[in-house]
Image (cartoon, rainbow over all chains, first blue to last red; front, side):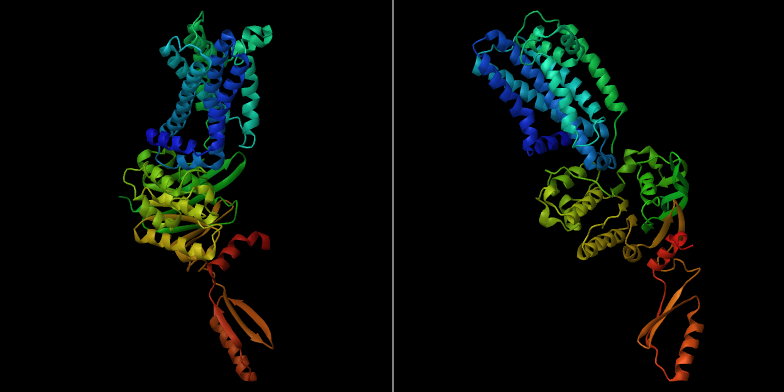
Length: 237
Length: 285
């Protein structure tokens, strides 16, 4: 049943141009625009590619699930599903799986475009890339579901989501190295998961001296909080 | 197999200080169409949502197909179908996809094509739900409730917003369900709908049942016959518990004066009369 739900979600996703735009086109547009500015500087590209990859992980899971669950709740689709024998876990797994598929596709696109268009090396450690992507999507997926509980309506969802997403991507080192940030903002970014997801992806794509275990630890801690809040606060209607 | 599809005894539901349902009891037999009537806020939807497993009761005993709905067992959910009062669809899903997909949740679903035909949506099978009219969306609601081939179907105001022709079609579907031996719990605002479809109805008001029985016999304990005729171009109406005596007197007087009682009518109380009498008593007093 989870598989059937996943396949349905995939089909429906491609019928919604706005969702496809925010999930795929916007991050790639940012990659291409910013990369074109810095294209002569390999060091900047080494920051940008993992940064855009991390941002994509957050956009395809946290943002997408917060939007979708709010809409599904408001439309009464969750209530309808609750009244059928479809197990809640399968239904949610289908939704989550679809978001995760988007995240992986997007990471692949970012890596391939980075390599072909801007000459960034192929990832240094593919297994670590897959592992950190998986960790990142689980973390932001659970946080997205948890955050949807706090959003009162679909109309309010873009404001709520962007109030979190935009500041977080700016301080987490998506477009420039977060080493350049004031200490206070860097401290905030270090407390949040995105910077650590980007660090992990950077270690996997670029290599270098990244504390992978430390980064993974923070992400796992946020995942635990996300899962707890996602399950605790779940509202069907 | 129990003979009763639904057993409710002394059901109570409070939301904080508000008692939405206070001591409702009724039973629905298998194969019966049972109508639950009442004004807005009377406790109809609360009662039905407790039976569907959406809400917890505060007190009382409830059995639906022999199970406690609060436990929401999957085997039990496979045997019921629910049409909620308002409930949406993914705007991009087509009618056929939705019916096929929901059918997958059940062990022995009805054929999706046949289900779509049953509710009369075959012309719209390929349409996305955002292109459907209000009445067509409601018919899709019904299709999704029927695709699992349930024994018991909850219909919460299934024809609200239908034009008269669409209502007749929906009524035919509900009659067909009855022929198939299904049990139907129907809540509705339309008294003609309840009268025409239900084997028995209960009228609920302020969280309690004020009358229950076959629609034709409801309020039989105090029938008010209406006798009316036209005299001197004016319509005259009398209400009485015993029309025999009244008619005898009226016709006697008319004959004695050589008058005709133009358009003489004697009508039994309709469900609507009984309903209005029972649900607006406070306002009258």
